[in-house]
Image 1 (cartoon, rainbow, N blue to C red):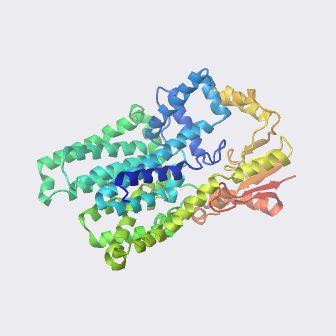
Image 2: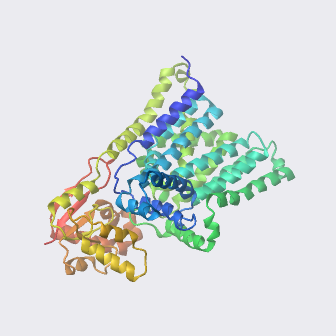
Image 3: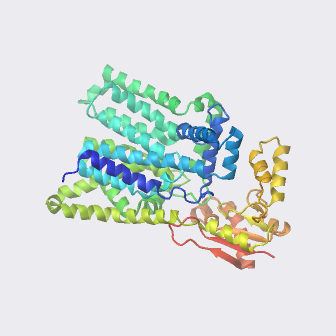
Length: 548
């Protein structure tokens, strides 16, 4: 039986949906990534600020697409009697964040799955069924993409828009229709509205324009220049469509945007920075988040494209090489910064795969040998994704530690905490103090007031604070003088203080944190440690010290 294109595409889309929606509720009703809650709150704030998220750390395409789904959830709740007013809707968020996070994560998962489908369509049109099947499987099981599809993050939206730019810019190699110029420019602007680095996709548009002419002198023709400039003028149009409030509140947006740019390019982020960003990505970032086989095949594909330098090779080469050189120069080195390289990597792996088939005759006449080669390339990524998704169904170390603390430590104990620690609840007195501070400063206190009014005395509360929030001059002295009963540290923060590049770049800051950790380990023995079952498990090692 011959399987048609339509059935293959349905299979690809369903497989992508299954890998991205499985385990989507991991960690809930608590959060493992603090950025998620900030982005969900910004989406909900659109109902308060005339459809503005009032948040500019990222542009607003994700908020604008997610808010209608949130509004539909509210409307359905009003019809069924679940919500009686906007206030009761807000109270439901304080009571249980789960449905709100499932909406946000579900949108990321759907957008990521749609990207897989459209990539398959693009590769099928470009190189045929084999390339489409391999490319879509590579993206379906690309570890970083699967991980971010389970988060409330704008990166999956950026990838979808970027693929659109690639598609229409590539069509400029075949056809100089006005529509290809206009849609390329429009989608570059929308990609920028997904995430600020989306503007870099303009390199594809430039290459499509330069490589698509029949003769070099045609570049300077009036018709070609007019089409190209008109496409450029569509970029701000796309940006305004995707994120209008970045232009309505332009001064506020620019102030935050310039600060963001400075943060990633120079000031850094303790524990997530490198003296040499290029080496970090090549020898640490890529192997961990895409696996070594995929990295080797992607580099091989880049090398083949450089040596061959066909028109299509040059089209696909310029953006990833320029973008890699750019992000490698940054001091901050998060894996998500290379996210726009995922689709180019997949394309280069397909190029390398097709090249090997072309050069080795036994791969041409033996179908099973091609299947075996594809299986060898995909084995490790598939294994990593399946292990990660298994641990999405397991409790994190933060949740396990929370339950142990509630069952074993005296209520209202004074605890020195860190970010990414257990999700323990403050005591009633602490909520009262927080409410008084917020009211004294004239700040909205809806959440704290709701939690205080609905405080459940059957669940132990604790007098805890983030020790680093107040930034004491001497953290050890602060720990002693304020009478803490327990200290809880998280390996993620601990390792950041001893990160080799952070020690070089920030000797005074790392020394500040190291004094605190050295004091704890030298003077106290841990009473309990919670160790992740695997490097793919949620949470990191949590250690509890008894100080009295």
